[in-house]
Image 1: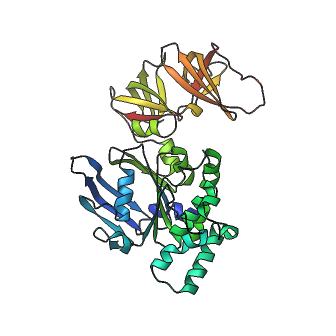
Image 2: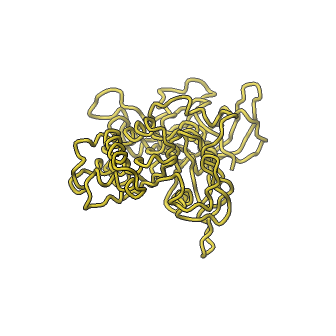
Image 3: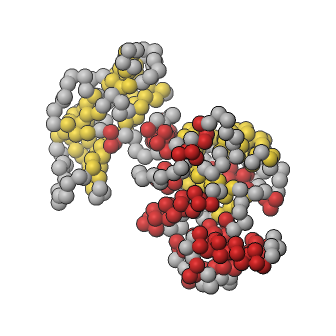
Length: 383
């Protein structure tokens, strides 16, 4: 997964003990009349200039939390602070916040320039100031040549940029984005991800995006929060959440993961190696784990498909390995995905990068293979 290059000072802001959070969400819950907890005691701190993503499946509570930040929903309990001010009871039109919806909600009878200027006119700004601000926004999103066009004369990507320009025209302190790229096709969505990040860095506005697309969140975010059933399960940078998932749910939701269940057999404190017995392999699995676990502790080993390699032979007896047979193949151009049925009866997914051009893959159906992985390749999750 590609990730955009960012200012290191922004990435490290949450690690600075002297930094003051720009947005604070304190023990916020939202309970509907049916008794359903859409948001369940969420606490979160976001720093100025971040591009933060709320990631989760439909119904996990991420959109409700976004609406609470916008003032469109009032929390059942908890407080929301923006730039040091408690805005929990502040109506939407008085908050330093703007929101960009997935539908873009452009006025069809207005031109691009008129759409961008709409909110500024509502605030009764001087005409000269409106004209200058619209010109600034048109340049920001590279739409100067389309100022007089109507929305139905624009492509999906162009409409998305107009909606973004309109959202930023009032210079909000916080911009909320609800699935902003969901209406775009795949290639346009990938290109727009980088454009959106570049614009965010230029204006310096704090962005919070709601998305169910893991790749989108990984590509665009300084940090992200994985939500499920109204709660936040893990917060971290894209690499932290992907490489060190805090739970089985996160491991399976972010990317692909092979999960081997077993029990702890022993721990080598000097090498910080955990020995695990699992029915998924003929021998025990040895993995790096800095924290000791008691013998007999039930655990799951999360192993990403790209961390497994196809070996010609077992390098040494202590190597983590399994034997199996190729049952399914998926060719994706840059990589190939293999589903291997092991001798123990489990299925292991392996990702192999296609470095050489070929008309047929190096492996084919029913090939017997040896799969191996390093001691630091997997993550141990307690059950």
